[in-house]
Image 1 (cartoon, protein in one colour):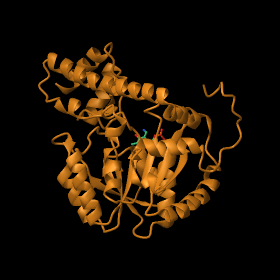
Image 2 (cartoon, rainbow, N blue to C red):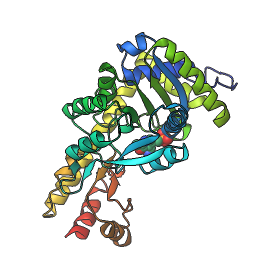
Image 3 (cartoon, rainbow, N blue to C red):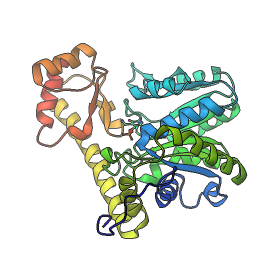
Length: 345
Ligand code: PMP
């Protein structure tokens, strides 16, 4: 449809295709959001999620008035450290993963956020935490909102998997929407790589939820000043595809259904992997495989076991024990389970 509409290939403006940015804001913040109604959200198209994080890093390094430290979870997506360091921020860690329970170290997380200097920047994975697949519950998000508010921290949400966690784009946006409803000001990085399968098109958005429409205008203008010498303006084709899908009611419904199908397939592959491991007689507790969400499972396997998986079974995944559940199919799950069973018994 985009090609048939025979559009030109002129430059977009610095902040990209306007219809796309508007639709991306609605997808993340929700159509009834007061920040949208008040025109308080400064948003720009970005070079996918990475580019959004980088604009945010540059913006905060230049303008954030308190500490230039950004607190990220341990572990986090490997590129967070590099993106923020290269932006001129100092990267510090907060506790997140508990290797004993292969779950969330919520008390440790809260303790670290409370111990951080007031007004620190805190990176939060909005949903489907990469690499662990472990997210706080809604109750825990509510508590996190309180802690962040109490300490006057500045939240920076990275939402690279909206829809991939639960299959529901609205539900997955809960943390962002909850923080917005609680009056936080924050930044948000969005990626359409995963939920629209537009990896190579580099479609994303960076936004700042501001205090007022007047502040938003000033922020918009500074974002333009930042982006212009970085890459002048973003590519148009992927953003046209995404905005077409988000603004055409039939296509939007079809897409939401497909996202749900994809998330449900991942959930069912988790169950199948666990079932197969149990059927092989594995004595380990594999409940975390099904309790974690999103594209990745943090198996709890040690680096030596991951090496053995590659060497003896040609199963390749990262040394931290993270496997891509999206790569599991009904055709290969048996073999994968057998390999995991062999290196863990
Ligand atoms: N944040 C997280 C947590 C990610 O996992 C990824 C992709 N792996 C990204 C951001 C950015 O991805 P992209 O630049 O392809 O949108």
